[in-house]
Length: 88
Image (cartoon, rainbow, N blue to C red; front, side, top):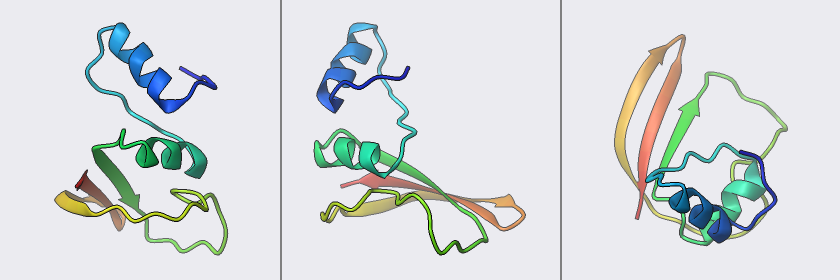
């Protein structure tokens, strides 16, 4: 679903449809909006064996600090690692 609604409105819309989980795949601005509103409880990160000098930031230009607990990590081949974090 693509929308321009605020994070809280999106959560309500999803809950009203009977869903218990929501996967957010967005850019830095979208990710920051949900995280700053305490609407993210787990984060999955793919770490690729590649360094880029420019690109879309994971959480935009906003300043905040969020503590994470590593729940799991998996080697997926070709140097790719999947990290699964719990947001404290």
